Image (cartoon, rainbow, N blue to C red; front, side, top):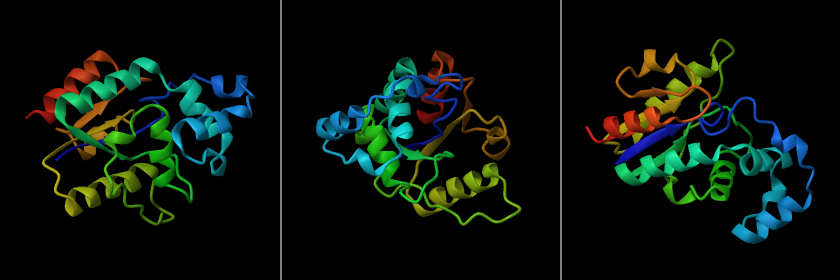
Length: 176
């Protein structure tokens, strides 16, 4: 099985995109809940609105292309932490048509130690997943350049969103 360890901010959601704050459409939750048969009212409005209004359309397209070309699944490795994670992430991915790529037994969350940075926590999560699941090949798709230090032959670093070059590199790594 091929897996993409997916970050969100700086990969699918550009850093400067704040459209979710410009739209105070409280009907959005009801509309999306009905459209996707998911109760989005249990999640923070701005998280749901961010996926709907702020995720870059081309970045989502490129991610879907990578997933289809390499028959890969998604394991989310990001800072969108909450007590509802990982179910929240699958439900949010549904809005962009990415739920079919969701790996059923998603991310293993570590208890954060006081001295751990977010990079260390995510490094441990990825290592745990690599040890636990039957993963043949993987890419860490992230905007943190430090991930290259942890996974030098499997990291693709974005600069605000997934570019065409990032897409090509992901496919090359996952088809090795």
